[in-house]
Length: 172
Image (tube, rainbow, N blue to C red; front, side, top):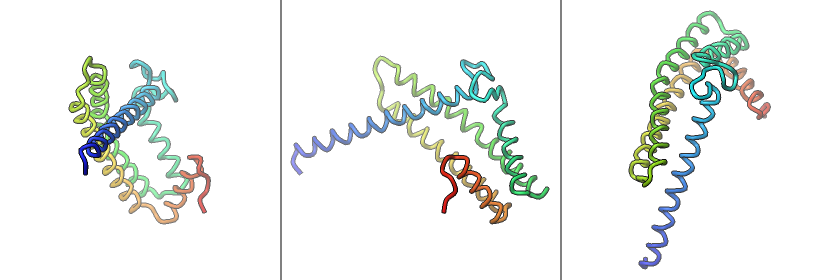
């Protein structure tokens, strides 16, 4: 490979890295902006979408869980097991959400600096990716645990409900 080809490839690789970083920053900003909007502006709970207020998201999720349990005609034992699974997941996800918020602030601070330190931002990106992976593993385990509590028919009812309420309609 000639030196010219190597330089060209190296330039494309750096551009791709910066585009991916920019996309990550925009994605993180979008997610955190949406969360800020949902949970209240400038620390004023209840001023965002849904007026959940402090702790309101957890209450909202509990109401959604109750509705889903009613929809699948869950037994008392299933209700208890699923509520425990959801409570465990919420407890496990809380520190991940706090760490993610901290990383978001750090990324914004690094981006606002007079001279942007690419290595520092890359380190923060790596940490954010690790948090996403950790959260994904916890959610996956909770789904498996919930699947072991529900019957196949109940799971199909939930899938149908999700498809209909997320704009995808029933799937063939």
